[in-house]
Image 1: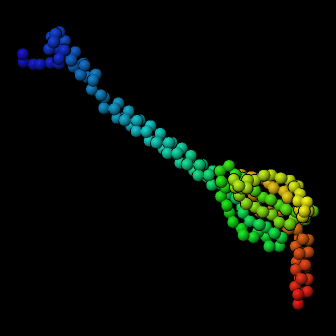
Image 2: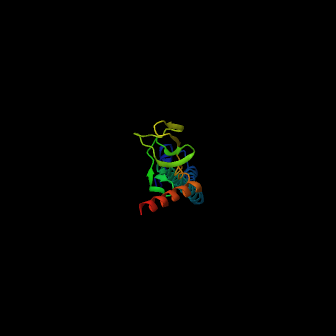
Length: 173
C-alpha cells in the first residue's frame, strides 16, 4: 500500500480519490463567504450593542429624572414676598402643595412646601377657620416645581400696608 486515503477508502476500498476530493472541497470554507459573514456578524453585534447602550442610558436618565421631583418651599407674605425660600425634594407617593390664606377677599399669606407622610397634601377650597375668619385654599401637584410661587399682593394692599407702617413709625417718634 503506497498511498493511504481517507478512512472511507481504507475500509471498503470502493470510494476513490475523486469522491474524497469532493468531500474535502465541500468541507473547506470559502474565504470570501467567511469574511462577508464575519463582517455582517460584527455589524450586527455593533448595532445591537449601540441600541442596547442607548436604551440603557435613556432608561437610567428617565428613572433619575422622575425620581428627583422638587417643590418650592417658602412662606410668602405681603410686601416682603417669599421668606425663607428653599427647594425641597418630593418623597415617593407625596405631592407638592400650595396653601393660600385669605381674610375675606384679601390675600394674607401663602405656604408652599413638599407634602410628607406625616402631613400629606389634601386639596381644600374655601375651608374656613371660624375663630379667625380666615379662608384656606390648598392645591396639590406632582411635577417638578409645580407649586408656583404664591400670588403677588395687589398694589392697593401694598399701598395700605406701607401707609400703616409709615404711620406707625411717625407715632413712635
